[in-house]
Image 1 (cartoon, helix red, strand yellow):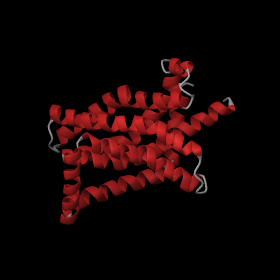
Image 2: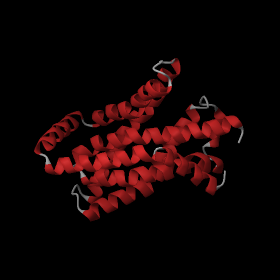
Image 3: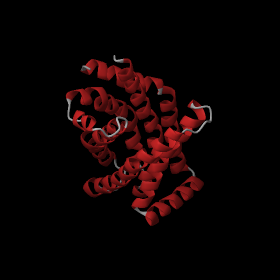
Image 4: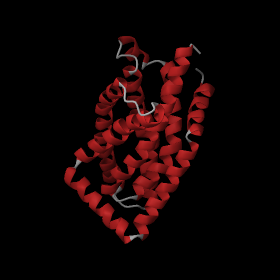
Length: 232
């Protein structure tokens, strides 16, 4: 697949989730506004921050497993399988949970590292540098290849040829690049909000955005699997 086709795949996936995405961004603005202006919201979020501080990396692990592995299967059963639970749903959860749990811990560590590098304040300059490193270094060169690569291999039964394909140009243009483009459309505004929050609230806010991003990620994967099945 050429670059143009890869871009078309990413844009088509984003368009199919455009309304939920805009709704999510609006909710994030409302969320931040409530945090700034409403005392009760701030008190609740301070309590969440306390849980995060007490639990440490375990908070990120559990919340990412819930948002990225469990919630998508629940939604799939409820809205796409007529409420019928299938064995495949359990298998999908069990094989996705370790990856997402590990990524939650990695993200938590990365946010802490960003705070060490650039500071924990919410100044525009600080947010700019954090977003730049997050979206144009960490994401395209680590997070996206690891996540897309894992599910590519998993969906092919962890066969040797699937592992070998991860290092091909075809994998980059058909799988990693479309996912990254779609990710930029969701995560660039998303991480701006994340980094505008206090350090202990960054993971909870990221988890909310992550839940929607997994739906985008799943849409791209389904589109590619159908294309491969049809031989196109």
